[in-house]
Amino acid sequence: MADIAHVAGLIAGGAHPTSVGIADFTSATTHKTLRGPRGGLIIADRKYSGLINKSVFPGTQGGPFMHIIAAKAVCFKEAMHPSFKEYAARIVENSSALCACIAENGFRIVSGGTDNHLFLVDLSDHGITGYEAANTLASVGIILNKNVIPYDTLNPNITSGIRIGTPAVTTQGMGVDEMNKIAEMIVSVLQNIHKRSELAAVAKKVKVLAGEFPVYSSM
Image 1 (tube, one colour):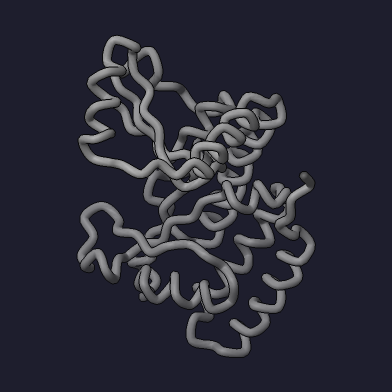
Image 2: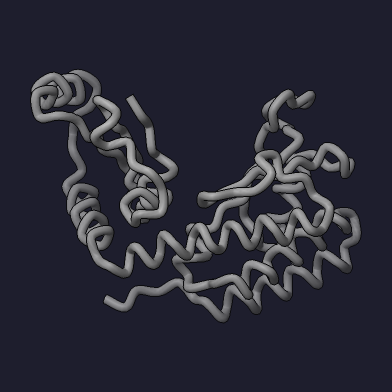
């Protein structure tokens, strides 16, 4: 069994190897990189369909949300469009650029780099916890999450790392140039985490950048 919750969109867009046809069962979410509604899916050989269907309903779930089913259909339709391949490729390109820029500023990337949509930054050598970093970054408008690192000495509610991903900003239309700007903002916050004037300056930059890439529907 393979769970591809995080990389389903990258797989659909041809930017990541697929588990379908290799694993007997593949499960995934329809949000995250697949960019659909909050929900999930299971892909398996037809011979398992009866077992899976009964396990889901009445086994564990009931009361299907028809609007979510419709939204999944839209999501799958979008994933079949050639533009989705471009989106998936840009996610990886943006992630790589953002990761490299943060690393160049003296922050250790746990995996050494990234070839997908996210990466984990080790803050243990900078006197900052993941909890403090995530909350401070959120206060200036940059949303990411705290995350444990391998052999973390801090508890999971505090953590020594932060996890950064690029699907959302890629969907907004941002590219490598914007990733460099975002990296500079993140680094500025982490290096000046107790300086209110510096944080206020970053907050203004975040607002300007976000205003250049508004979230809207063209439908």
